Length: 477
Ligand code: ADP
Ligand code: GLC
Image 1 (cartoon, rainbow, N blue to C red):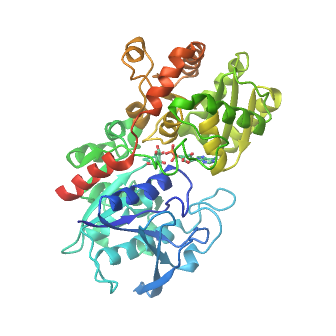
Image 2: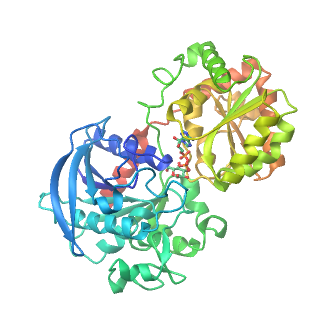
Image 3: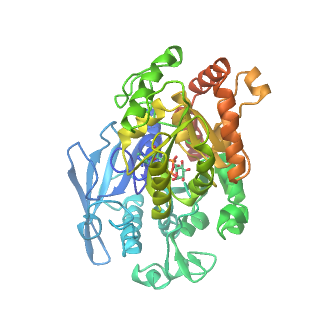
């Protein structure tokens, strides 16, 4: 049994802004199910949804500050959670990273810098708990300083750093390195310095014993300038210590057979019941209720990564086709407004909801016929997996985890029953449009469509295999 300290800035159902939370909520659970002693550590944000009793664990003094560690457990499992409690930094409403206006909290370097300092103390068993982890598993830039700080310690645990998204690096002015009181040995271009800025993510990329990405394809992509954001050279240099492990999904939460968020539960043998969810979804969005018209859905952050611009360029042609489109998301105001404008012009075809709504996300997965994910890059992506499990056929661009989890419907894959979606290559509106047309043709052939649905629904996206891969990695380290 390994002792694992799992470090994250979000974890569902405690707090979630995106897929990082899904993964950091469900991977520790899967590792615990493999009988590992795992503890999750996270800042004690005001918006954290803890249901279990929270108890005092320990007090730590760092940089003349007293920080408390509290203990609770995940609301939906027995995974132990340690909360880093420092109200001056974390006791604010809303999002872990940005304020109500969508602007990053001005003291993010200090907030996550302190978090990393505390994690390092915990990792070194200096909190009077007699618990010394074998592995410290960090996720994304918010935990990036941990491998760097640990690299200076003797008898330290092994470190793993998982990249969920290279686009977010935690870059701050160089003066932050002094404000954070970072050891001078870490401050150089082959360390935490990146073009005279302090880079949190480099702490993980340079100093972790092993780097993982959330899909094998993304591990290769980030070694190229297009996806590496200037860090491709470093990643190539470390390629012996870099690999991809595909994310799984939480089948307790995403199971069409027992999903409390949807109108009618169903499985591959009762696909006709899926239509009741379709009607409910059409009604909820104020679209004509019609079981024959193909209903396309999209859920996600409305940012460049997700290819929203590609979709916007297709909408004027899409409204001439026999289809409906529903969207749930929030993000760049430019995209929000442009989408709203289309919806206002074509209320019988396009309907959008700007915002965040977990329950509606489940209904879209269950009620839509097709799920669009035209991402420009996608480290893994979860919705294409949720979609497949719900018999909702994904249209995806061939990148990152989308390439690794969706099998294009071609004559060959239709014949051998492996087809699970529609895949297109180029990040252009015309390629997306062609994929949409291809989808409509398949939709008009009910037998083929149903076969793709059944193939998709029977795919195993459970965490077990991936959790075993992480465990093998921990053992190797
Ligand atoms: P990313 O982490 O890049 O945003 P993922 O596909 O990995 O993308 O995960 C996104 C997760 O966030 C999914 O669980 C998705 O359903 C959820 N999500 C994104 N936007 C919304 C929203 N507006 N309302 C509800 N859930 C959302
Ligand atoms: C990131 C990526 C997404 C991935 C998620 C969980 O937010 O953008 O592709 O699925 O992390 O690993």
